[in-house]
Length: 105
Image 1: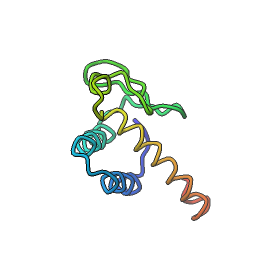
Image 2: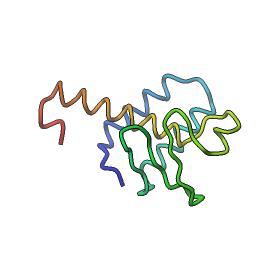
Image 3: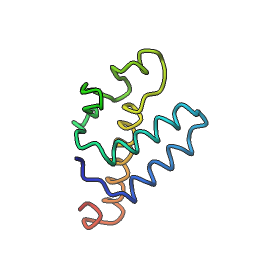
Image 4: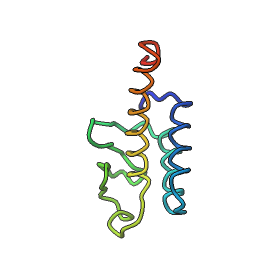
């Protein structure tokens, strides 16, 4: 399971909701949030989020995904989770720069 500052992640999630009017993306973001909180089988490799899904399939998500929703042209929670993790990492780096070493822990 990834080590995530829940307050920072909640800010990232709220920003994501605020940026979209798409009900499908909002649903994907909500499921991504739930999975990020409960799924211990996720790893960000610096380029993509690797996810062991409930279907026992490993997905590699960044701007693309191998799931059925993506293949049909719909938003998927895998891509939403990958983007949330990317934004979380960016916010963490910004906090490290602004707040010093203590914010990086």
